[in-house]
Amino acid sequence: MHILLAAVATASAQPNPFAGLDWSTVAYQAFALLSTVLSLGLTWLGVAARQLMVAKTKSEVAGRATDFAFGVVQEINQTVAAQIREASADGVITAAEKAQIKEAALGVLKSRVGAKGIAEIKQVLGYPPSEIDGFLGGLIEAAGHKRKIMAPAPPAPVAAPFGPPVEG
Image 1 (cartoon, one colour):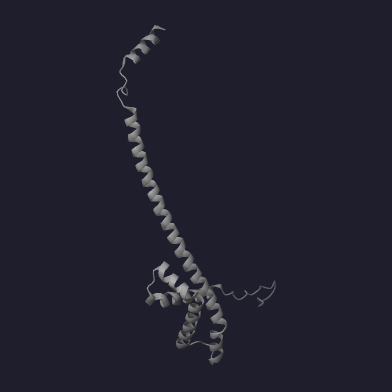
Image 2 (tube, one colour; image 1 turned 90 degrees about the vertical axis):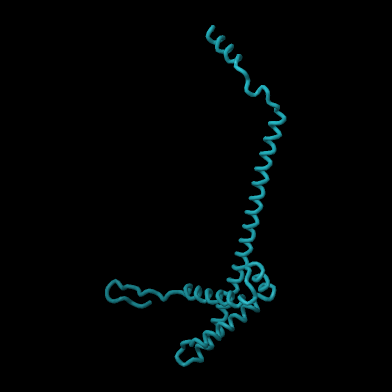
């Protein structure tokens, strides 16, 4: 018991390091630091949200343009390209005929997107007017390639239990 009392007396004899502090000044300094950190965090959050919105808007505009291009390629393939294939003797399309098909597809795509859509592409995606045809032409070529990839594969030959494979 005497040891415990001696320890308490020794602990109370040591000076309190916080005795001379003005707690209102400490609280004010802590609040100033916290508000600075909080405003910095909110600013960063606002910038990140804006960048996300801009990226999402660009993605939506590019996605709509891509969807339009794919639809136009499907339509052109069923109309203009089929007519040109039928008109050619060997059924193979020449480079000049490919250019004609691409120009027809570009015209249809521009009419589908409209002046408002082209203005939106210029503004949101940042393309100058001189590069709009190149951008839309690239979408048409990509959609044509995608259409070829998505074309159904011919059926595989079925193996008969005895004998050679049978087409079917």
